[in-house]
Length: 393
Image 1 (tube, rainbow, N blue to C red):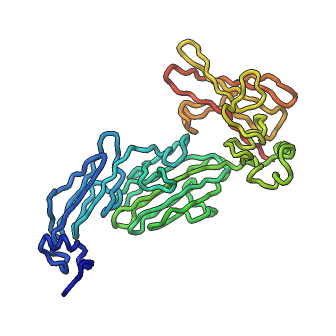
Image 2 (cartoon, rainbow, N blue to C red; image 1 turned 180 degrees about the vertical axis):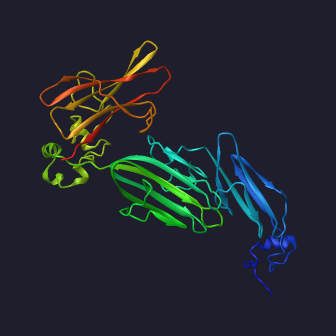
């Protein structure tokens, strides 16, 4: 049978067939070549040959250079399985990806949030597959019957949102759970089977501390799949209380008040990163954009974000927080906390301090200084914050 230059019955390339002297109509009578490339590491090919026969088996093992991690195969191979067994039925070109490790908090766009991963395979940050053009978390691929999980804690009420997707050749299961159960009020299903493209999920979270978990189960029995998670955020729901409403009525026009995207407590009228609630709490003008140093001036300032400072006491240091507080207003709680790790839990996590010194400013405001009860030796980290908590109407 005749065939033209554009025909390739067995998909091995007519030029290769001509050079090898093989029959282009017989897919089992061809010379197979394996082209494996890598940057940032090496790949062991076992057995390593210049040519292979139809049906030969090989195993590829990616080995990253120091300081890098293996993040998957590309080209004619996909996934994370490493070592990767292959049965050769045609010539292949395979890319091996190595990259600098990315912390889960960075990959998920949550630099101050603590994440936990475990199970039969870990999650890790990488840049090869993501939704935002930067990084995302993904699972290590694992054999049939294995489970991997990713977890964080939030304090509600609020809304958790994220983007997720899965690569699967079978019925691998990817779930999102709140305190171990599915959330029926989510914006899309939170129990998925098989492969699906990037999808955004938004879920209401009730009052209190809750565990959020993403669980990937390999159940297909076929090639191992992968799950991805990106752009996690948690937005606290802030009730609009009477005192805030009275303040907002003095700051905004009726037309502006009708637009909650501009004037609600959680909104930022000037889009400067400081919510209206914080400006209400710290005597800041919501109509004036804040730029540069937005912190309170020590001892004399009457407006601004809390000032965190460090004082030396010999070989140790002590952290203090200075801020201004509304007097005789019951719709806000000002909670000063200190931490050594930025974690929400544990002995070194955020702990409330109630040792404060107050100085009246006028009939509406007072200055508050709170000193940390933990003294820090040189070289150790310590953090302070003021947490604003609206109280119910």
